[in-house]
Image (cartoon, rainbow, N blue to C red; front, side):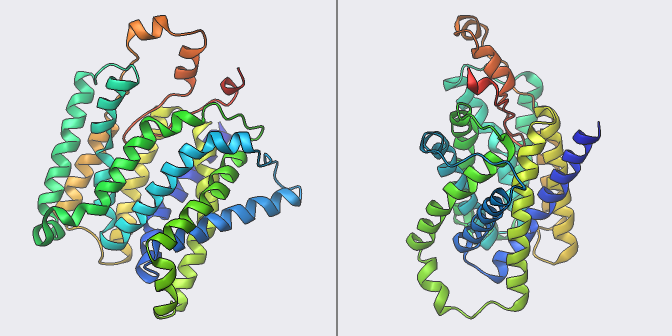
Length: 333
């Protein structure tokens, strides 16, 4: 229907542009924590002002909910910060390639700790295809040839945090009950993230280096304003899309968005991977789209408490290019 189509279009546009515009912004203002602090603060102020004006229905900030949301926020902030450091030192394609490799670790952790079966034959072939694509990309990457494995320090940290976020952190927020699931989630994510990202700006030395650097040019400030406003759209469209389409559809949409990001990155400037590197990246994304979530082990599902299967069915956790689709009504039980 029209609502579903619009939610897909909004998310696709926001997601495709966000990664590239963040790269452009950080190339002009090489302080990722400061850039993301402005983004989080902009989204928070936008939601609060709209709430006070009666434009948006947003949940109040409640300590109990905030505590339940913090594990997700911590992993989210770290993933965003490491994402920014990758964009500061590497190209967009490097980030996407490593991001596509996350199912390899997630599928094993789900089998070990979350009661799921090992990947099916199709999924195993998909994971091996992702691994082959990532290996091919690394071998084609000039940064790897010049610096070796040290070229991938930040993106490796990013991969570790993303794997944790997919397997554990997002499971922890299913018990947080929002009256306004979309804008409530947007508000809690951003307002609770401003403190941790500001702390990272201080710890990393960005806050002390910022006054000593040359003042950003007008184009840099324009990009910062653009990515901050786009961050509001990205927050809303992401949560909105998750409740309107299935997890599998969300996964395929994510793949399409990353392909659009690659195309846009190639068109706007020369800071992108080689043609061979992009080819291997497409292999990674294509194989990632073929991955199917492993089912719960029958003996665990059968012995679980009433309502557990419903939670697992409605709060489907997916990996790779997938996100978690959560029905907030289940959290009320």
